[in-house]
Image (tube, rainbow, N blue to C red; front, side, top):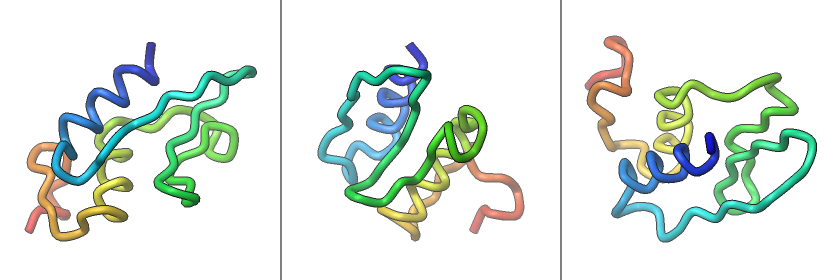
Length: 79
C-alpha cells in the first residue's frame, strides 16, 4: 500500500517530468526508489521508509533541480 501511495504522489507532483513509475514486487520488505540506474532511496540501506517530503526533494534534485515544491520544501529550501 505504501508503494502505491508513494508512486501516486510522485506522479502527481512530477506529472510533466516523470514518464512512468513502475512497482516491482519483492520479498523481505524491499522498498527502493530508482531513477534509471540511480538509487534515490533504499529502505535496506537507510533503515526505513522516507518521509514523503524528503523523497520528493531527492527526486526533484535529480530530475528538475530548479523546480519548487511548495509546502514540501523546508523554509530554508524555498527560493
